[in-house]
Amino acid sequence: MKKASRFIGFDDRIIVAVMIPLTALLIPLVFFGRRFGRPPYFTWQVYVTTLITTTLIWIGNRYIMVWARKKYPHFEQTRKRLLIQSVIMFFYTLLATNSMHFLLKDFCGLLTPTDRNILLVDLVFSGNAAALFCTLTAIAIYEGIYFMKQLRYSVEEKENLKRESLKAQLDALKTQVNPHFLFNNLNTLSSLISENTQHAQDFVQQLAKVYRHILEVKDEKSIMLKDELEVLQAYTFLLKTRFGENLLVDIEIPKEKMQKRIVPLSLQLLMENAIKHNIVSADKPLQIEVFAENGSLVVKNNLQVKRQLNESTGIGLENIRNRYKLLSDKEVKVTETNSNFTVSIPLIEN
Image 1 (spheres, rainbow, N blue to C red):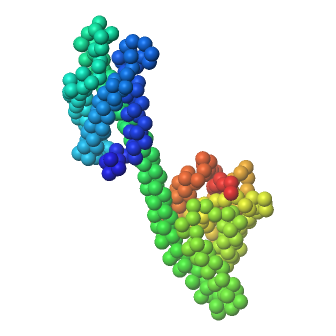
Image 2: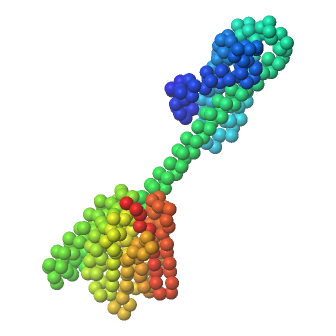
Image 3: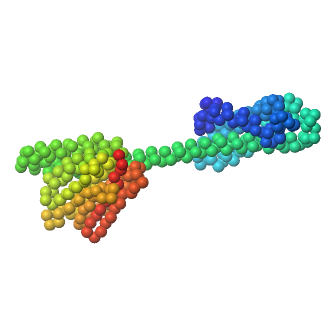
């Protein structure tokens, strides 16, 4: 029975142990009008007979379900499986019921001297009705639990696939951004080495801090805002060294917000997007502001879009949106005006 439970979808030993005796108790009372203490009497012979018949019907139908699920295991075959399974179970139930009635009718004592007014056809009808009731009860219990477990499994599988997809997107982003980012920073470092040795050392330390952070949070769903901002300061140092006064960054976050959480690398991606898609020059300095507002962290930049040969895919912003969907019911908000581009990401409770 335990082996067959793999195809049933759950361990049904408790259900079998409880439902078969309970059903055998209810059937004589409901379908045959048996009573305790007055005719027609509910005797131990009646209960044993009903128990044997119920057990045969329940276990037999259970193995029909096991067979059907082995033969039609796929979800898209459910309708066909239920149809074939139901037809076989219907005929099996009638055959088992009438065979057991014929074999056990004398032991059961259905027609005692006080029951002679009961017609045999009524007993047969009631017996078959009771058997079909038993079968429908078993089907409802097994299929109900089976479908609930399949539904939960389907939802969990979908969520796992979504997480894997998001992780793949994030890994792809790292693969795309890091070489380009590393190339630019190595060029900056090359010029610093000959001009300012101390600044070059500071630059290497901040660069190492950023890359160490990327490696540490690659499997994290969320991190503390305090930790993300520390790395953002290092990232800003690298950008300011590269662009000088052409890039203006203002980060103002209240201390009470530092224990909130955000998805990792989100601020770095948003700042990188701002630089990637906008002009950064002495004539048109790019201004980036990072601040807290209405339970969200806001990254805002002045809009001075550069001409690009390849249209933006938007994968970075979409990745942030999707990762937040897994953690919060609050949405990432994007606002674009003629002068500014603003992204608001929710702050998650610790």
